[in-house]
Image (cartoon, rainbow, N blue to C red; front, side, top):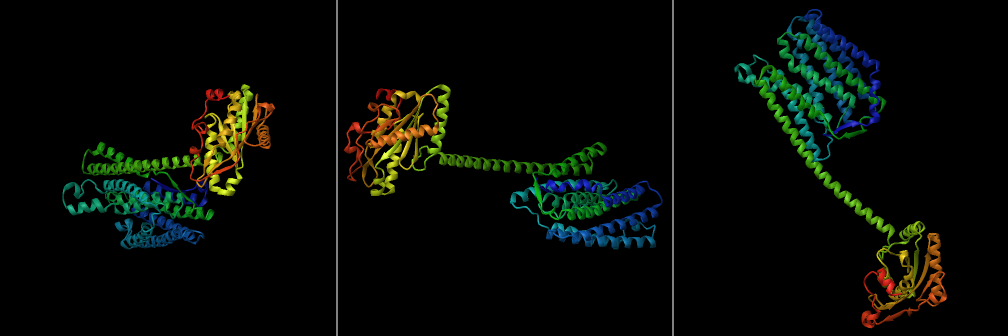
Length: 572
């Protein structure tokens, strides 16, 4: 149940309106005139004359300010069109007042002089039809089928409630509907009595509930109140006149038209202060108008049942209560289904977002070719390992693995063959360590390993296994090639070294191993007897159709599983 409203920045003008001298003067005149009629001072002729003079004054104010609103720059085209029709209607209302005053001077005691002569009524009707026609033909401003369905359900709910009140006041005891005579007149009283109020209210509801509004929020509230009072006056005129309550009808008409004049005055003030006020609208998530309408029908039903029991009017109000409640239930069911659909879409969007976020995180911290950790993730994990080492006095081991003679593979066989080789080497290095360890590709043909400190005694075995694993032949599609690996190892026993220091030590050790003949490993700070093992890492290109496994013995194959602590210890 959406409703368009101004943004909070624009609603701040409302408190200033309460101090507006023009509005204060208009309110004072209206209150004095209404009070005069309710107090029933003077005779009928005097009250009639005062009423229509007050109406002429109010319509003059209405015409003056609606003319100023039309002249304001920067308004949307539809808003200007609406206020131009209001300007014409205000002129017709004023003309009708002058006609009525002339009729009063000629026939002061005539009943039509109090209620309105035909020519005056025609002027009012033409002006009202003009304004109502502009609003009824204005666009809803609703973008989707769901919004339009919600709008019509909410509008129907309000209209049924309004019709219930109109019928209640149109059907009076003694009418044909009660005594069973003249059924046609009874139906006329039932359905056509409140038609003016219903049409006017429909227009107001349409404007309040749709996305299009040619007036500010405050002006719209005053306009809605004016329409409600005028509709009440039009609907109850016959019953009140039958009891000779002219004064109450006069008071209702004066109050309604005072609100109408205030509408134009407020519109003039607010649009002049902020020309963008009509274009800066936002959607409210709901409207309480349909719920308030249903509640009002039930209140009326309770009052009617307590006063008169289940008579004709009670049956009509009961039917309206059932119908309006049914529409609200349908509206809520539609809202529940829509919410379910929106939640499903939201869940899908959240899953899509999470999957995208996970993919982006993976791309940010993993190598796109091999799927291994990249330098950023490796550095982050090394920082964490060194921090744990400082707290628990455990060792951290870093290995830098650089491929020997990798460039000739790219030069002879192309980058595709080089990519295949890199992915196979990445898989083999991963199989040489445990799941708690980290293998990373630092860039190009350089890899790194971060090992848990509990296997300090197994470092030579792991390094030797890496050298041998890399040296195994690799089928790259066009040929079977072999490369070697130079491994540099750095060990921190108590977490005192920094990440840069560990990487530098391992890098220096790796270049030392490469300088001493490639296909070997070097442990930073170790003795000469401990630090090297040769694994025959010269580049070889074997015939393309031969299988690497067919050329090697069983002892040369690389096991496709992670190594455990027990295996590392056994291989030392």
